[in-house]
Image (cartoon, rainbow, N blue to C red; front, side):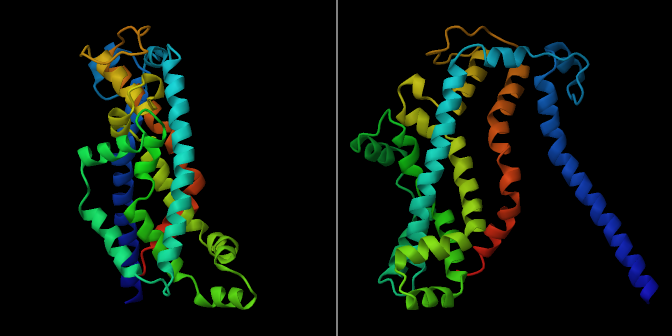
Length: 292
């Protein structure tokens, strides 16, 4: 029996490892193909269709993308919006989540119902645009940050994480004379770093991928984030009609290689953040989903 169990266990490990390797390859190979394709020539890409190691390395696609200062301005806008947007979102989300996690808060169930309601029904594009316009946020970076300041899903995870913290910590702090603000910043926040790191990553990805908000609210091309500029580059490379404001110096490049280079440029910066938050990611997401 012991030998049969050992054999079954080994067989399971082999099958499990094989499946995981296959899944990993299916996930990684397309991305490697995109990276390699961005460094290859159009001729080789057309002949081989799938490239992992270019025969002839070419930087034409990247030279085209970075041929003017427009791309650098857009990168600066995206980095600024991502940094300040994530910081602002984390502050307001943590404050609201901490308040809703308090059992002595009157009407917290009604407030939570309103939060969950927004996950099912939204005001829509036109009402949201009218609200942003009435607040005077058109053509300002606040239009890219304030409407997305609090995500209901992230708020619920943060609230549940706060609720899972031992009540004795707050009670002990109150006995020592600590107020709500001191409890929040001296006890709750330091103990919640896994959840904060996880939610920060969610918000950072959202702000980095800002596209539709910029299209709707930003009329000044100098204030466009990287996603909008890269989309304009792809359209221009495809030979289609595009708004080429601030892009007069571009010439038409090879279409497929530019598309792949655009994917790399748009993905790589935010991808570099993941290794620094990986150790907190699973822990923060799971602990915040234990209790409803």
